[in-house]
Image (cartoon, rainbow, N blue to C red):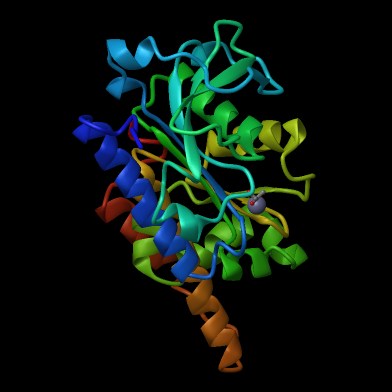
Length: 273
Ligand code: 2HA
Ligand code: ZN
């Protein structure tokens, strides 16, 4: 069967990276059944032939009007599709969509009429924000990392400053690679516009957002980067949990040691691009 990826090596590389990452999500135990979703802005790879491709399914509403998305193209994981299946067959478990001129609806153009992710309002609201701010970030990743979700069941870790402080203090690399820390969104119905709005507020100032008792959302320059952001914070959560399993509350790096890393490595206080 023909695929939009045929004779498009650059686009194929992006989709193959998504497939590689979805394999990691499954192996990490972060992607039970159809858990999690991904979108990647692929507009830079669109050629005249792609731009002329007709919709292969009825136009659908996004649920929000997102003015910076007009005419943009995204790869999106399909709703109800499994990450572990996407790892083998990305174009049968995800689709390429085009945002319509009303900026409030989208059409699927390839390869198959796979309806995109149930969290599309959140993903596209983040993509709209990235374009609005001129960011070079292209990917959004929602997944269910076990240890971070477990921590969100405790009131102490629903305080974003406390959660960030504990994670940063587990290992210097957490601070170095997630210098904006983790934001928290109190429990909100999955797939809702309210969840999208709350996520957007938090991602402005954080590397990753934790949805209470649900999962994480990360943005990245590409899908590998969004995965790394999540992975770095989850590693810190694992170390915290290992210490607790050994029967003690970990000391954590001292505030002075944390400040030293921030200063010596000149860590950014906002997203680099
Ligand atoms: O796609 O994870 O939050 C399934 C989900 C919804
Ligand atoms: Zn989810």
